[in-house]
Image 1 (cartoon, rainbow, N blue to C red):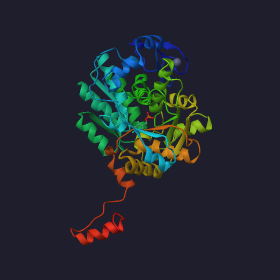
Image 2 (image 1 turned 90 degrees about the horizontal axis):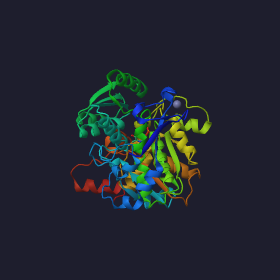
Image 3 (image 1 turned 90 degrees about the vertical axis):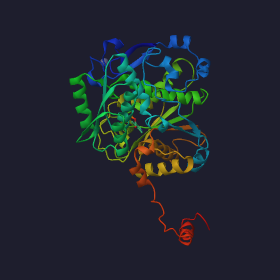
Image 4 (image 1 turned 180 degrees about the vertical axis):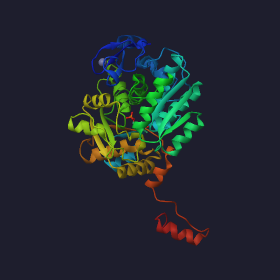
Length: 414
Ligand SMILES: *Cc1c(COP(=O)(O)O)cnc(C)c1O
Ligand SMILES: [Zn+2]
């Protein structure tokens, strides 16, 4: 593989991957590691034409940019290759003529997290572990459980009691051992770390494990390829722990290193007003302070983010921005994407869209700019939130005259 070493984000010291550390032994849990590649070798042995000829549409088409040995064992779900749609009518409604939606809710378990979990399972297989574990607000868990099941591994998942029913159902169907921790995500996370240490399971806790960002970055590699290597001006994603936006950054960064793109898109990170610790730190320039988790967007309700350093660097070094949105804006964005595109996102999945709308209103994103919003999770996981976003169906007795009345009242007919 083309990995040269891991480097600590805090002290910069290089580490060899086979030392087996997930964080820097000198800096402790705050010393996040980052995977570094031998870009000269990648540039010499791989090019855009070879990529274009590869019929594999999954994330593994970018194998030379991934921290896995060529052809190593891995889950065989069709992860990645998600569509990039032009969004002309939606763009018109929000005043942006050059808008695209990338629907990552179409991944096998219904979220962008599949990209990270596939790497986690590949690494667990590579190191001979038979059990993978994580704490999750929902999607990391369901994607890990699905990918583990596909590869014949066991999974143990720690969830907080607020995870939506659809995500819990996925875990159970995928045969995971599900531990529902009475408390917040912070509590679930702490208990999972303890159990992972005690029982020696493979750790898929995203912010700690440097390989997961590498999986998530494939969404950026795809965006660049789908744009013919002429990247958009802005890429918009929602932010919880911060690994998704860090991954988006890393993907574009890698492409810049090998000269396949000539600039980085600006990244717009979106958090919910009721839980915006990273956004607040971005705005104040101060440290990240833990926050309440007061939002219906469960997948980004992360009051104590583990990856703020990588997330903040992603935004700052692309001259990007961060913005918050109210839950009402998120529900509006859910209806807007549904009504204009036929795309159904979960609340965190559409929070990016809500943030873009606000950024356009504020003049932060301008009319002439080309923008891609990533929908990060599928709405079928959380139909209770969708019910809050929409009016109930029209009830009618089986009577054509009564039907005529209600259709007229709903302006379907005149
Ligand atoms: C996890 C998740 C996010 C945010 O990703 P982070 O890495 O936690 O910042 C956004 N949307 C959905 C649907 C998610 O599952
Ligand atoms: Zn260090």
